Length: 251
Image (cartoon, rainbow, N blue to C red; front, top):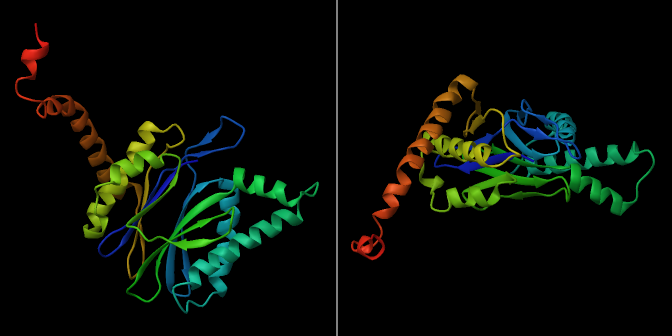
């Protein structure tokens, strides 16, 4: 697994992911996995990040590129429907080329163990920013109704960090800092997350996929912030104890 994150800010959607991919049944890891892609749907741009099976995601990217070329964006469902169509095509190809043939329940297990999940961010009308989540297993693309969505293993950690956050009130730079911090904490505390951080910003206009040199200041800020917290939390914690507590326990 991995971590991929979408944060809906005031005027943009920030997407973030690590670059580590694990391979089922082995201890092998790829720390340079390309899990963030941009697609041009006839002038309407979508950015996709993933978690899960990299092989299936690579096949999905290829199919989605083909879907983008033939899709006319008419409404908010046009791009999610294209994602669903691409998933169906990958599944159909896998079934056709399976040797020996598998039964329905066997395919459900294969798709569950090796499939992927994706977040898709776009702006179809030049105004409305949209974030969808699609699962390879059931093939459905669903709108994200909250201010963020996360894919991958460290769900509890991410929910804890973002519990009191209000991304919808943040400027883009704030959302980038928050997303980078979440990914950094996942890489520091979850063995299935690692590699470099990638960031993309989806605007009402053309999206911006950041270079590593542009991401570096946000990674440094996240690292410095956490080091500062570690150095001060134990001292600050005691400030919330009753003032006379030392008289009880010190001898």
